[in-house]
Image (cartoon, rainbow, N blue to C red; front, top):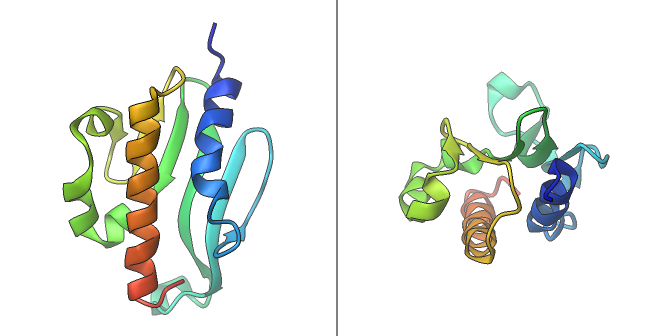
Length: 124
C-alpha cells in the first residue's frame, strides 16, 4: 500500500539533485523547498530569493511545484502528456500514489530544463 510519505520519498530526489546550486529553505518529512542563493533580480521580490520549487506532503496528495514553468512558458510545451495529466494550475503536479518511472524521468528532465532556463537568465 502506497502512503503519501513514500510518494514524497520518491519525488524529493528530483529536487535534492540541485541542492548544491540552490538553497534548501526547509528539509522536513513534509516539505522540501528550494530557492535561489542570491536575491531576486525583480523589484517586487524586495531582495528575497526566488522560489524554484518544492515537494510538499499534503492531506489529499503530494505536490511537486516547479516555479520556472510560470516564469518560462516555453518549458510548459515540453511537459509530457502523462505528466500533464498530473498538473494542477500552472506550476504544480499532484500525486496520490508512487509515480511510475516514466513520470519520474519526465519530471527529472523538466526540472533539469527549468534549472537550465534559470541559469541562462542568470537567476541561479
